Length: 116
Image (cartoon, rainbow, N blue to C red; front, top):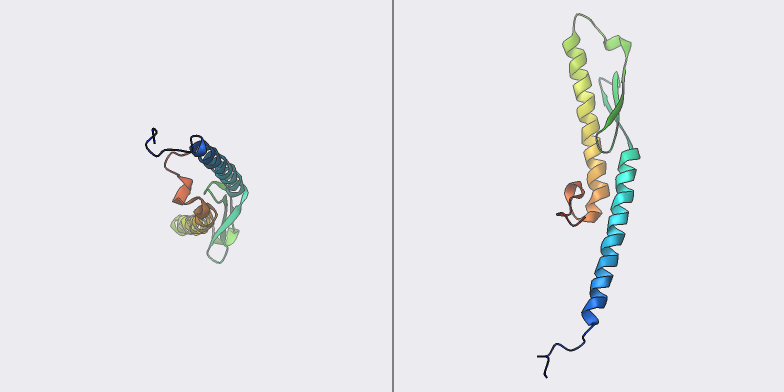
């Protein structure tokens, strides 16, 4: 027992290579999921769809539709409230999709503690 019970020699290297392959596969899957989140369309609404906000699952807004019936020059505050409510509705839906898709990576928001 000149090696103090270590034995095996290269056995640990195979385990490390396997771990690296798993990490690389997980990184590739996470990149695919990130792309999916970029392309996922979320629709936030308010006022019975009088205001509709379009965004992706990462909360990047790319469009807003406003029904002319809610445009009142004398009451701009109501329109502002409807727009904000539609955005918040979209954010809530985006959060749900994001959490669902990123949960398999073990960290909210996809942060794996700097592993990737």
